[in-house]
Image 1 (cartoon, rainbow over the protein chains, first blue to last red):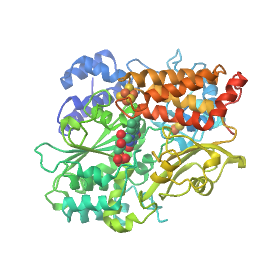
Image 2 (image 1 turned 90 degrees about the horizontal axis):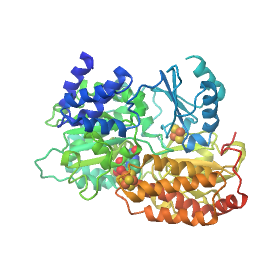
Image 3 (image 1 turned 135 degrees about the horizontal axis):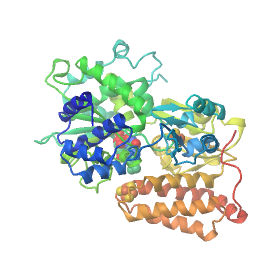
Image 4 (image 1 turned 120 degrees about the horizontal axis):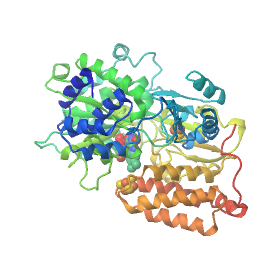
Length: 154
Length: 423
Ligand SMILES: Cc1cc2nc3c(=O)[nH]c(=O)nc-3n(C[C@H](O)[C@H](O)[C@H](O)COP(=O)(O)O)c2cc1C
Ligand code: SF4
Ligand code: FES
């Protein structure tokens, strides 16, 4: 389930926390980074690895919005629509994306290429409007910029 | 003012550049002092928390028990998810070693042997930058065993969040580090008595901790003369919304909001009038644009004006802004982020959101205005954590200060066509 490198990292991390349960988030991050999402099987694996109940892991995965228990699109486009972005036109950006990608916010395209999400403030309010694809922030968006971002991945 | 937190020095994020500009000299100095002397210095400086509540930092540190056989912990709060707030990110990117240095000094002052730096999961890029700085500091002996050849040892671990505004609340943050869902805990007991794994714990914001090396280096007297006397120091103000030059500006506390908007942030596009500002992140009460004269970015002035410094995330709205859409969006946020543990917050935020959406659609009634107020009043002060208050204040202040907007919406009874945006 996890690479040798990550297993080594986990051994290191165990020294940094007094309980193994505390490794729940770090280990779930590793799983998601390697597999793109966290399957039921993976949750059971993590529970075994950390010696915590499966229900605990499930509870954590479902609580945090960044953990995905189901596969999502190859490109996860997250558009902030919170207030600072809204004041600078995130509504138009979102509509444009829905149009371009042919999916509504909250949906994944049938070819699993795109997932479009509406997200809360991403800490990019001074460079609004913004969207993120994975860890990459795209800021000070215009419709032209959005087109370029989508074109380069199409 | 000389910039202290974000000085204009190229490549300051690199350890050698930071050292060349006096970096880690405060740590050296602090390690030569008694831990109580360090805390005292911070106390006398009058530094107040930059995480939202302006709580005196030195005083908070004195809450930590001196005699205890339990380990003690420090949590550095970099969850930064309050809408309108984007300042801690600047520290991660441009001055990470200042934060590390401050963290180690804080640990020394309180006799702490492990610090966790909690950074929101969305900041993947900045977490990697921070991790690089931490690794470099370990390699140089600024963190770890026997720091700078002294008896003092402490670890610094970066803990990555996973998308939950509530994890910025201090007790939810501790649960999140423990590997739990981010549910706030009932207080008391307070973290200094019963924090991480039941041990004494202090929680401070990233920017707060970044002030510590400055205080140690230059002394409390020098520091306490910067800005507003009762809430002194440099402060990172993030300006967003309808301004020509949005961004994070470092300034002394106590600068008039109008100066921040017009001098620092270049004024309002198209020279439009200001209808409203939210001064310190989405949870702080909204202020009318025509009542900003003399209102300054410090705790006392903000309180007198009927709002709060919060995270100093100043959101500016011009005269064409549809405030009904603004408050509906804010309420949607708190509804979405409520952890659901207490009924007034879980149900109340849902109702606020629902009723305000009705207003946006042009279906709000006069009675709804009072109902909104009543719901907000019922949430305020009746919940486990301050998210409930954070959801109530914007609604209360919006109705108090902009009742006319609601009434006009009721009279019009039509859905708006334009969005609350200026070109
Ligand atoms: C819902 C909620 C969210 C919060 N989010 C943050 C946050 O993202 N960052 C932060 O430093 N403080 C946040 N706080 C405040 C913390 O609970 C805590 O007071 C703060 O980190 C203490 O640091 P300070 O004393 O240095 O300001 C939040 C509080 C609440 C109620
Ligand atoms: S006030 Fe809201 S967020 Fe805080 S504990 Fe209660 S339900 Fe959760
Ligand atoms: S409101 Fe969109 S990034 Fe903050």
